[in-house]
Length: 107
Image (cartoon, rainbow, N blue to C red):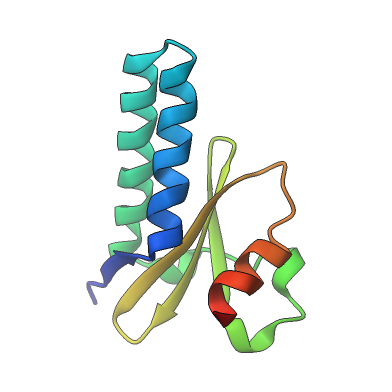
């Protein structure tokens, strides 16, 4: 089965913030490359999105049914709803994601 991948506004903002941060350091090509690589990692979820695992910080939120895949230092947090994969956030791996994702999913 092929899944469709969609980004929430918050996830799009996450991706743009990552791009802008690196670009503002004067590393424009690196920013473009990372943007493309993260986007590609997200779209790879069209195939076998079940491969991701439940983030340990979200195990208590069973109703959210979030999973994650890791790309470099980033955690790509998503939900599978039918045949659609919804990217909820692209978050620096050093951050605790529990409150960020909870707020995004409950608003």
